Amino acid sequence: MTSTDFHVFDTTLRDGAQREGVSYSVADKLAVARLLDEIGVGYIEGGWPGALPKDTEFFSRARTELQLKHAQLVAFGSTRKAGVAVEDDLQVRALLDAETPVVCLVAKSDVRHVREALRTTLEENLAMVADTVAFLVGHGRRVFVDCEHFFDGYAADPGYGVRVLDAAFAAGAEVGVLCDTNGGMLPMGVGRVVADVRARTPGKLGIHCQDDTGCAVANTLAAVEAGVTHVQGTANGYGERAGNADTFVLVANLVTKMGIPAVPAECLPELQRVSHAIAELANIAPDDHQPYVGASAFAHKAGLHASAIKVSPGLYNHLDPTVVGNDMRILVTEMAGRASVELKGRELGVDLAGQADAIGRVVDQVKVLEADGWSFEAADASFELLLRSQLPEAPPPLFELESYRTSVEHWRNGVVVSEATVKVHVDGERIISTGEGNGPVNALDNALRQALVSRYPQLADVALADYKVRILGWKGGTSATTRVLIDTTDGAGEWTTVGVHANIVEASWHALVDALAYAVLRRPQP
Ligand SMILES: CC(=O)SCCNC(=O)CCNC(=O)[C@H](O)C(C)(C)COP(=O)(O)OP(=O)(O)OC[C@H]1O[C@@H](n2cnc3c(N)ncnc32)[C@H](O)[C@@H]1OP(=O)(O)O
Ligand SMILES: CC(=O)C(=O)O
Image 1 (cartoon, protein in one colour):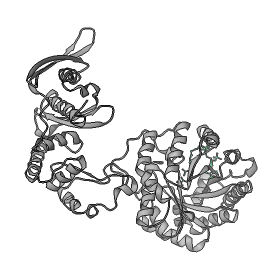
Image 2 (image 1 turned 90 degrees about the vertical axis):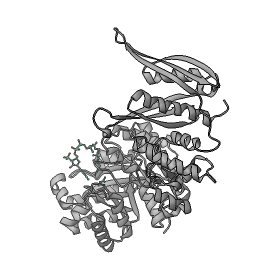
Image 3 (image 1 turned 30 degrees about the horizontal axis):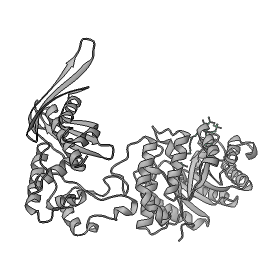
Image 4 (image 1 turned 120 degrees about the vertical axis):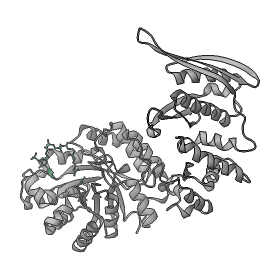
């Protein structure tokens, strides 16, 4: 099979936009289309012109603003209305006005929907399909037909769905897409129906699966196994209700597991980047646990996994993560063993050769600290400092603390200010420094950086980017433990540090000191 025989059809901009909470601007839609083109899909369904003004504008701007390398743009719409001549149907006209090379029509293929939703006859629905396809083909369009509720309809009256397909093919449609619109199917049922339909019609078949049973990807693959050569999906599985088959997971599975050249080989490593970029445009946090492209998709926490990965990464990875643009990561937590620390050291560029004792001490310390509420899996910078502190060439501490103090004042006029004083010793010199801030941690950060900046000028570029607090109530009673995670940036990179204590300011102080120590470790010379 070649990639020209097999189509990946992405409907992020049509069905994906039906997800609750998503609302793209036209500029967003153009940006999403460009990104989808970079992963090499064959078709990008851009929306429903004539129904949504934004989609009409999208197709109009696409004519001049979209230069697609791989994909053809598709306009979506429904068959003509019952009892209306096709040339008089304004929505069908709007499909022509979109000037796309391909049109995807949604057609009813379930007798119940024809009778109850369209309130027309089975024969009129067949005529609606045939007329609309023929009209669009007559105007030079390639036409695909989404047969809505195909699987539910097949259970009620298998013959009717096939008649809809036959009517579409006879009128010139290129693909008849079997849609699991309500998303209630399981892979075994999809496979059976597709094989049956495959035997009853020679036309090219496609599949469109909603994810209401959590099986959209599996259902799509079962349909491919049974003979469809056109698959529909959406970026990150966005879509109506529970969503659709995830285009990224589909593409990765088709290419790497089923050996189908669904997209050009050089596009596969773009999957992770494009997935995250589209999540950004959709304003949805990426799902870390998304197969193939999630940040945790190749992250290993268990010590036993790491010990085998040290011998050969393939022993605990189903795929080389770089194939889809992802990375393997080792997490060092209470579940780590010596191999986890060794591999993490490699990842961080720390040479641990001949350091078996130090590695053992780090494993033990992490287990003890995590039992006290510390967590290093999201705080690589604190872990690296801990690791290096056990090595013979351990970096010296930036300073010795004599004391710190911080206060919060609430003035009568409602203004709240904080002040902090730190007393530290740097290279034998005693420095007292005071800082103000909008909160005690901000004030401490200002005071400490001011105390250190003449000795470590690189700290002038450092700023706290994010601050997260979690109260760990599991110690019981009033002595809850507080865990603070601080993200810090120096403009060139970002790192995360952790601090834990019953007192939130002291927990923050630990994370803050690590943040500055790591800034100096990153850039020893200013
Ligand atoms: C399975 C899917 O996800 S398909 C995609 C669904 N997407 C959307 O619905 C998003 C965009 N939709 C819209 O903007 C609007 O619903 C519109 C413009 C399409 C229609 O709006 P309205 O004209 O106000 O009608 P309304 O949505 O209430 O009803 C749809 C009409 O289309 C008819 N219809 C539904 N499916 C089809 C079809 N496949 N072929 C022909 N007509 C259809 C219905 O019978 C109904 O007709 P009626 O007006 O004679 O009762
Ligand atoms: C066409 C479509 O989105 C569906 O049937 O679910």
